[in-house]
Length: 324
Image (cartoon, rainbow, N blue to C red; front, top):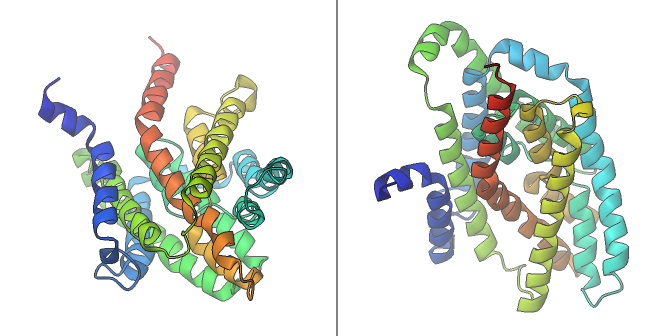
């Protein structure tokens, strides 16, 4: 395979390396209040593009079918809001016996209680051909469910989710109704659009990470937290993959992908306000915030790196299920 062909095939991984490098060299460009204004371009514009793109590409029947997939929704929400926190609580009982800073451990417990984000899980699911409609529902529902039962202003959460998720999705569906024949004939690169938006999110996320004054730990503690977070994500993804791909589970390969991303990803957008409210006045708030600030870019980076492998697995499963 020639160099150009290799670059075309691996353009997304190369893009990840480039945006992380750019974020490291000039983090001020993509931080909140910076020239790119991510608090507007990412939080509202990019997320709206993601769900408009989904509304345009998904058949209405697929959305309706996903809404009625109660077993999948129950699995994701139970894993996210029940199993995840309990498993991390048990892990922290063991880690408490070590010399790891207790406030970092408390931050890890807080991360475990966060809902999935409304963007990264959907993009990654779409990128490999997973059950995108199910990912949309569970990402939005998780944030809505936890936000409505926490101290975070309910009206703020509902209005943001409505404007950036529901409205673009409906507009996309309406446009699809009039453009269906054209879309079916031309096959627009919906997946590529989502991947480009994901690169933008990765860039601004790492700009925030590299410029955040809260992440000022000694190198050993920082390394330990990073290793723990990546280990948690990989372990839980492997566990979900095992549980959801068994014949007795009743889930398709596309369902498994959606479950894997939705049940292991955690929301930074909802998480940071919750931390500031729950731990208001704590002098160790910066240390408590560190695990979430690391978990967010780590989940995007890990998911992006695993995309080619998951795509290959999905293709293999589809070939196996296709009658000769």
